[in-house]
Structure formats: structure tokens, C-alpha cells
Image 1: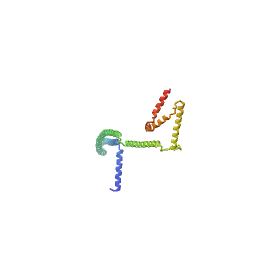
Image 2 (image 1 turned 90 degrees about the vertical axis):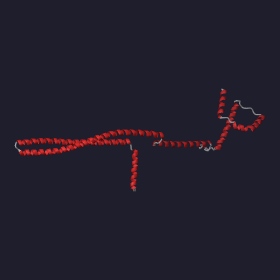
Image 3 (image 1 turned 120 degrees about the horizontal axis):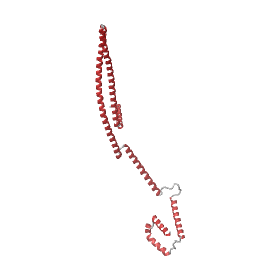
Image 4 (image 1 turned 60 degrees about the vertical axis):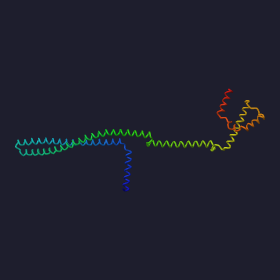
Length: 279
């Protein structure tokens, strides 16, 4: 097989594959049905034309038959008048007309046979068309039902082309979402660890820690002032108590470090109880 032959074969194969995918059986059946109806119309038109021709020959035959009677009467009249010459001419014309009538009768008989055959073929074709119509509608209904079932199955299983596109879109969206969530978590972690400096501030981490210590000292001083104003200030500790607390601190410092801090929720609860007792 030469290069051109192979190329032609490949092109025909591709076109045939494309046509098979694009072909709708319902449309194909409808087109075939219309073609058969067109053929039936052509047969009917042929029968009508044939019938018209036969009628014309029959009318011509009738006129010839009238002429035969006329020439026969002329011959009789010529014989009565002893005009044998005229009688002979009339009979010659009569004979000529009768010969034409015989030819017309033969043609009319042939046309009649052809017409009978066409009528029989028309009836056969019409019967086939009716059978094809019934089968066509049945095939179309089966195809539409199968197509609907296939679409439902594809939608349920995700095997269709459109569902595959939807599945790929979901996968891409899920991947982008996971990436964005991971990026956000990483940014939060870096921010909490102090790895990112405030771009709007010229202070570094040391400055911020010093500010926090200063803020804590200010809060403690304000708390002492508030307690003094309300008469809640504690008396000065004696040296014995101080020494006792120092010894206790040496022995139990580890436990205080482990459980000395109070949760924020407990502090808030105690503050609310104190506020309620004062009211």
C-alpha cells in the first residue's frame, strides 16, 4: 500500500469514526422514511403520466373510429350514386384509419400493462413504507430509551464526559483548597512564633519584650495603688514570717512553678463573685 493510499484510508477511517459518533439513528431513520415517501411520490407521478398518455391514445382512437364510420357512410353514398371512384377513395381512407386504430389499440394495451405493473409496485412500496414507519417509530423509541438510560447511568457512576469534567474540577478545587489551608496554617504558625516582624513598626522582638515588662510593672503598681485606696493593703511582714516564707520557698518552689498559675476563666469567675458580694 502506497503512502497516498494509506493516507486516504486513514482519512476515510477518521471521517467514518466522526460520522458514527455524530450520527443520530432517529434522524437517519426519519431521512430514510422520507426518501421512501419521495420514491412513492415518483411512482404515483409516473402512473399519473402513464394514465394521461393512455387517455390521449384512447381519445385519438375514438376520433379514428368516428372517421371510420364516416368513411363507411361516404362509400355507401358513393355506391348509391354510381361513383365507384369516390367509394374506393372512401374505403381506402377507412382502411387507413382502421390500421391506425389497430396500432393505437396495441399501444394502449402496452400502456395498460405498464400501468398495472406500476400500480402493483406502488401498492407494494406503500405497504413497505407503512411497515418501515412502524419499525422506525419502534427503533426510535428503543434508542431514546437506551440513550436516556445511558445518560442516567453515566450521571450516577460519573463515567460520562461531562461528569469526568466535573470530577476533575472538584479535584482541582480540592487541591487548591488544601494548598490554601496549608498556607494559612503555616502563616499563622510563623506569626505566632514571631518569625514575622511587624512591617508597620520599626521595633524588633527585644523592644516588644521590654514594652511588655514595662506594661506588667505599670499594672502591678496601679493594682497596689487601688488596694491602698480601698484599705486592702496588707501589713508589713515580720522578719520571722519572712524567714519562714523564705524557707518554705526553698522547699516548695518546684510545686508552685508547676501549679501556681490560675486559669483566666477562674480569675474572671472570682472577680464576678467579688463584684456580686459588693452589690
